Image 1: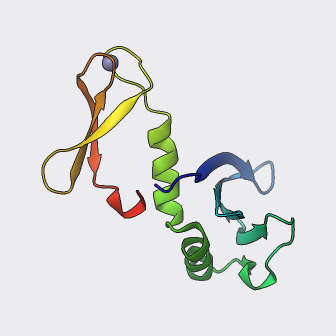
Image 2 (image 1 turned 120 degrees about the vertical axis):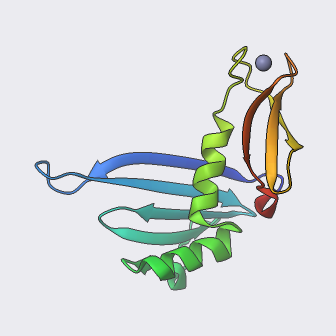
Length: 132
Ligand SMILES: [Zn+2]
């Protein structure tokens, strides 16, 4: 996870009220770019520069492979990684509720998150070094 990278995930539903369809919209802000991927009934990705301009080439619509590709190119991580990382950010120690968890290496490919307050392992997960 590079310095200054911010991830935000919004979940909601779209489509007709009688048959709503869940979506999630993932926004990664990084290096002056704001990359937004919308994955649901409609699927799109757009990249906005810090000047407020949209990069036209990056607006991919309803083509999941293209969307995943552009998202990864500009956000530096796949939509899935961003989504997972965002969930992890909201974790709290399951022993004491503390929000500060420090990743430690566990078994190969595994990361253990240890609470900074009570020093107990709280969560374990696959290695996320690809985006750190
Ligand atoms: Zn704790």
